[in-house]
Figure 1 (cartoon, rainbow, N blue to C red):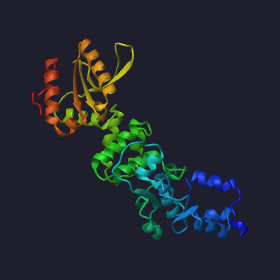
Figure 2 (cartoon, rainbow, N blue to C red):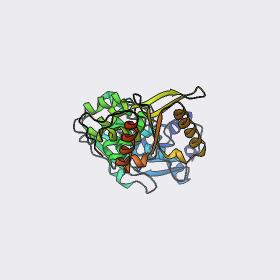
Figure 3 (cartoon, rainbow, N blue to C red):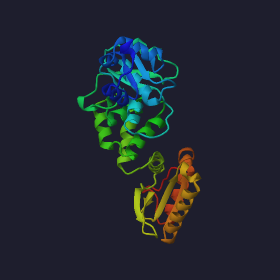
Figure 4 (cartoon, rainbow, N blue to C red):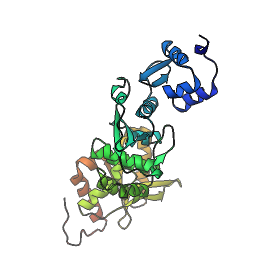
Length: 324
């Protein structure tokens, strides 16, 4: 069977490369005969993952291949969306939700084959929308929604509010999206789930917060009627290097640092201690809290911040009433 014998085809090889080794039967027929496609499947060089979609090579598929399978199986016009689209655009992090979201125009029926994907593939969730501007479509590998739209969708489809806020903050912190871009998307989606949460978190990020813990700290201050700090304050250490402090009350010379998981790293821990010593030597006060403490024991954090600020000259709220 001459047409079943592999001959070099640069165009087919390039297609497989750009689509992470995934292609549809229709795409394959542009380069091969039906007999050649059958030969690749029967010989184990290609694997049929669902009707009309193949993965080149045996074994378990990778997540980038799962993404291509989902979009190609959904048919023409399908877009990768939500968290999967944000990850394809470079968003880093550990996420509880692994389902792949595919966006279709409203009214279009999802192919049945999406419900019969192999168990080794991530679950696919078909979404539909009537609100998607041409500017929110991005050509890519595969085609997907733009990063601002992907982040807003990921937030509204997240399993809980905390992960939704983490997605928004992470995208801003990693400089993949601007808070103003998120606000522009939400302005076009008045009925989006968690719209208010996305707006509030984006505004907090625009105010200088570099992490979810810093946002929690600022909200804690507002809730307990403490002065709002300056965020990501820039200072020069004793060695002349530029450093950033999470929160700084410049008027009172009080700093606050919120430690994440990196405090278990001895090298980072020693660097943090040197920075803390530099601040004390310069005459300022510094308080340190874990991110877990800010979330789980906000009253204790607020009490210590209030006492530090009072010792530095703060006279409390104008009406003299603090919330502890």
